[in-house]
Image 1 (tube, one colour):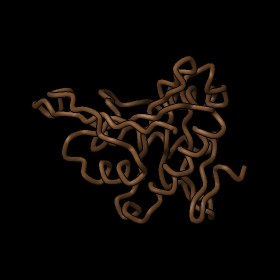
Image 2 (tube, rainbow, N blue to C red; image 1 turned 30 degrees about the horizontal axis):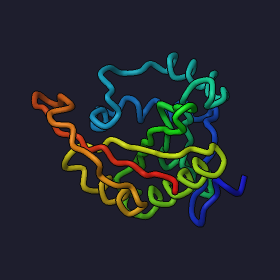
Image 3 (cartoon, one colour; image 1 turned 60 degrees about the vertical axis):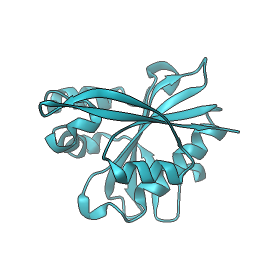
Length: 174
C-alpha cells in the first residue's frame, strides 16, 4: 500500500513474528509511563493479542502498526487508539524503540504517514495525543506536524511517587 510507505520507512500490520519485539517493548519499564502500563505482559497474552490483530479498526477501536525499515527491521510502533467513528476522531501514540534510532526522522515520517492515512482513508476529522510535561521530543514531533497544544491536565499521571502534568494536543483535518 503506497499510503503507508515513506522515503525511509513503511508502516505495516502486526505479524506473528513480532511477538518478541512487542514483548520487549511492553515489558520495558522505562516506557511504562507513556503507555500507562502497570504490570508486565506475558508472551501468552501478547500472542493472543497478535491472534486478533487482524480485526478491523471499526470493531476493536484500535490500529497498531509497526514502523519498519526497508530491510524489514522493526524500529517501533505507532497506534491509533480510542477510535471513535461517530465523532470521527482517534488518539495517536508512537514509540521508536531504540534510543539510537530516535532523532533520525523515523517518528516524523511515521506520524506523517499515519496522519495522511487517518484523514484520507479513515475519513477522520481529528487526531489527538497526550504528552507528559517534560517530554520535549514528543512535544516537538507533534507540534511540527501541526498538532496544537489545547490544554494542560494538572497532576494527571502518578509516576514514581509524584503526580505529573500532561498536555492534550489536537490536529483537526481542515
